[in-house]
Structures are given as C-alpha cells and as structure tokens.
Length: 67
Image (cartoon, rainbow, N blue to C red; front, side, top):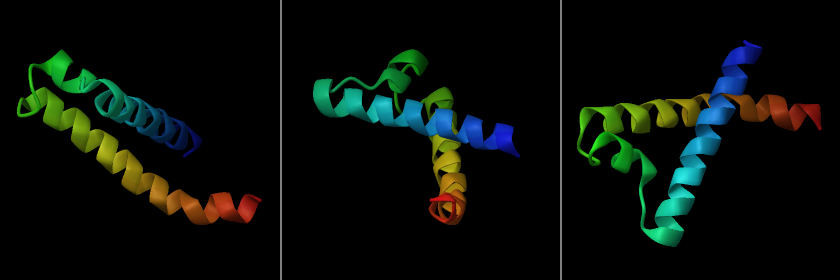
C-alpha cells in the first residue's frame, strides 16, 4: 500500500509540473511527447494522473489524522 501512495504522489507531482509549464510557458510536455492532446498516449497519461489524484483524495483523512 505504501508503494501505491508513493507512486500516486509522484504522478500528481509530475502532473502538477506539467500544468505549471502549461500555465507559464504554454508548453504541454505530455502532448509534446505523445504527439498531441488527442493522441492515445497523451490520453492514457492524463487518465492515469487523474486516477492518481482521485486516489490521493482518499488519503486526505489519513494525512489530516497524522497531524
């Protein structure tokens, strides 16, 4: 379970960094790597990052309890 938490956190951080590059530089790293936002590879990456974010929502009670 701990490995899944770490993987989820890494994916969320990478997704956040991608959004930072979009916001600051109008450069989407994921779409650049996979050939566009509508390509299958990009959609898979976006979906996996979104699932990681949903998983992280379930961790919020645990994190708030630890403080």
